[in-house]
Length: 127
Image 1: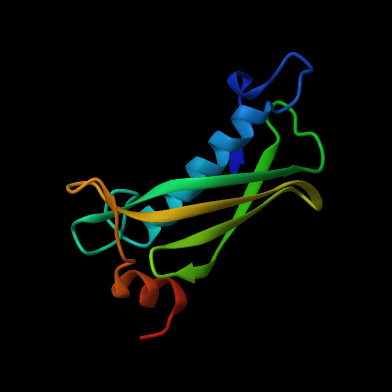
Image 2: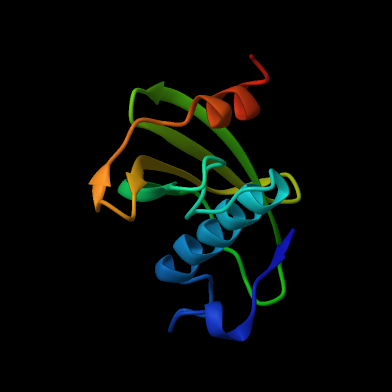
């Protein structure tokens, strides 16, 4: 659960679009942390991620101190990337659907890299 803060509001008094994207970024970082990983290390010590695209579908408003649940699903794996699907709700109300494309990226060579097999096995539960 993530609570909407005063800094997250726009001139209309509801969750701003940039803040919604930031809340998804927090959820993404938390997902990696909970897996023992980070956005700079997918488990092999050299491969991180780089966001390649972002799609946001706004469904309803969220207001100051609303508690937002962000559920994240990992899918659509390719040789060098995957997608994250985020569902944002407050209670039973759908606030937004957010989809991000993430490319595996070697920050040492500054190039797109293959997804580490261990990462794919960890998030899919398949060895």
